[in-house]
Amino acid sequence: MSLAEIRETSFEETAGFGGQGAVGDYIALLKPRVMSLVIFTALVGVLIAPGSLHPVLAAVAVLCIAVGAGASGALNMWYDADIDRVMSRTRSRPIPAGRIEPGEALAFGLTLSAFSVAVLGLAVNWLAAGLLAFTIFFYAVVYTMWLKRATPHNIVIGGAAGAFPPMIGWAAVTGTVTLESVILFLIIFMWTPPHFWALSLFKRGDYEAARIPMLPVVAGEDVTRTQILAYSVALAPIGVLPAVLGFASLVYGIAATVLGIAFVFYALRVYRRREGEAARKAAVSLFSFSLLYLFLIFSLLLGDTLVPAVIGAIWS
Ligand code: HEM
Ligand SMILES: CC(C)=CCC/C(C)=C/CC/C(C)=C/COP(=O)(O)OP(=O)(O)O
Image (cartoon, rainbow, N blue to C red; front, side, top):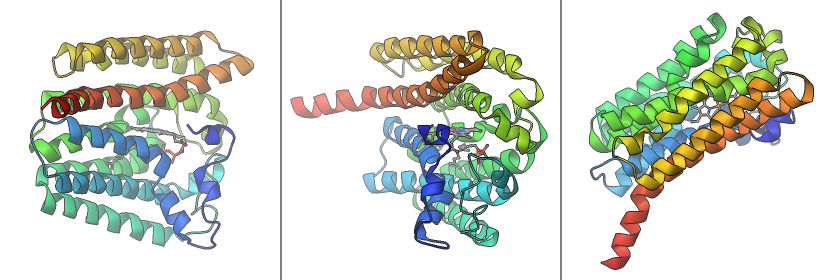
């Protein structure tokens, strides 16, 4: 996280300086920082998929995924305003802080959702649009309205929503869902639990106060540490699969192996350091590294496609 969150400040707190319902508050409803990585993974899905999509349509596809992702963030904030009001990390968001009316946020989220799905379907293809609609529904309804408040497995199942964007990007170009796009999905799916549980270890008090059944609250910190390690150990080889299956290079394979080992190393530190400031620092480090890991894995996949293309263009 931006370490802004660790410092108890957030983008949402800096937004809204222009007064009630200012543009900055509407941007904050889109959860721009979290969504930036979501959008990057979708962009990589578009750029590495085989086949050709006109560059303008490719840009439209990424824009629609970005708007749809932001819209689902706004719907999440509309529904979660009651618990966001209780948690220190989220209480300055536009709705709990009273800068945006809940009804306005709902209308904003629904309008952008419908707009992004319709434009993607009309301009690109309806498989990608259907996947986008499903992802928005999964995050805003299945995760936010149901799982988040119902079960400590909320992240594992609900996290699937965050894993769809590269598959949507891939489908925008190819019109299909293939093994390659399923692997991209799996990487993010296995990455999400350690990403979030690391944060929840040092934000446990917030979730307790809001009565959200996150794993450390319900099962305890030791179980959470074991789960983090288990998912990290599973993630490391899945991150290498693109090279093993032949749709990424040896360079990618070596780099993904090193990154996977580093991920397990950070998870092991969380597992071993259980007390006081050392425990908190280990969890913060794993959370920060999780963001770097996903960014680098998708950057490497992009490099695999772009570098040969650029070299080819220079030589020809
Ligand atoms: C259900 C799944 C997920 C949960 C519960 C979750 C939860 C969180 C939370 C609570 C934060 C703290 C900061 C904030 O509110 O801005 C955060 C930060 C972040 N998450 Fe996740 N996350 C999930 C999935 C994802 C996915 C799939 C991505 C990207 C592919 C992602 C990317 C990020 C980024 C980039 C940040 C840092 C934001 C900043 O700089 O402040 N997250 N996540
Ligand atoms: C294309 C598309 C629709 C993409 C959506 C991608 C997606 C579901 C990303 C998950 C991001 C996230 C912050 C989840 C946490 O919600 P939370 O409510 O637990 O976190 P909070 O407490 O910060 O609100």
